Length: 129
Image (cartoon, rainbow, N blue to C red; front, side, top):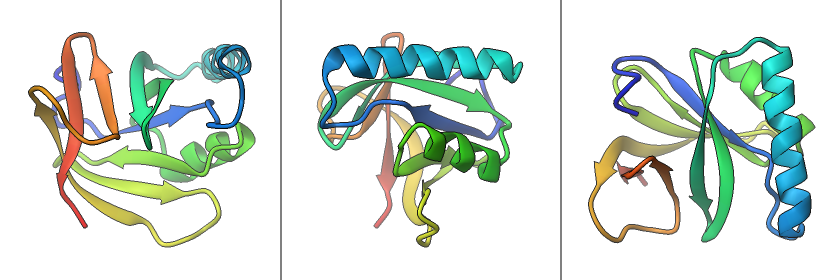
């Protein structure tokens, strides 16, 4: 997210692992339309969460509670939140404690099963628990 220096952001998806690719695409279109309706700035990116590819949305400066509300509406369990210092947290829609993931960083080559691809640049969290 080179275009968001020192800007906090969240990453949301509408994909669910046990749904078909077509249904996940429909839900992603619905999420995009909802974000447009709310007049939020966002960027669509390719994500991978727990080994499953998905369409994801990077939304700068969105309040965490609002992000969790949107995620819950789209049947998501989590939201990735990155602060201005590039520290990353996994926020849970069920109210569980946030999980510290480390620092949001560019990576080269292979990485774990959780990453975001923004154009040709791959990002993941490094150094968390």
